[in-house]
Image (tube, rainbow, N blue to C red; front, side):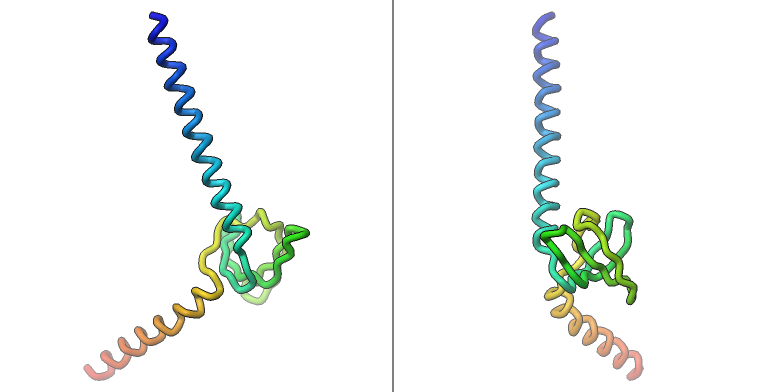
Length: 110
């Protein structure tokens, strides 16, 4: 009888330990992501708004986002995740344009 109670406590302790470990990993990943934010990155706020980083003040932990020409100031912690980096967006743009041009040319030929 005592063994079943001990086993139950060990299992509960193990589950709690694994859950806390997972939360620490997620918090560390989010912190690393916030540290790599740069001007020009596309981000999503915790409210679900897509925006582009215009200014970044790490000392004051403030960020200015450009949302279709409207500049909004947020705390850095209001960023949920980075959608695309500024450098990655520039390198991917020509590939998309070439694909659409090829599709348009094939439609015209038919």
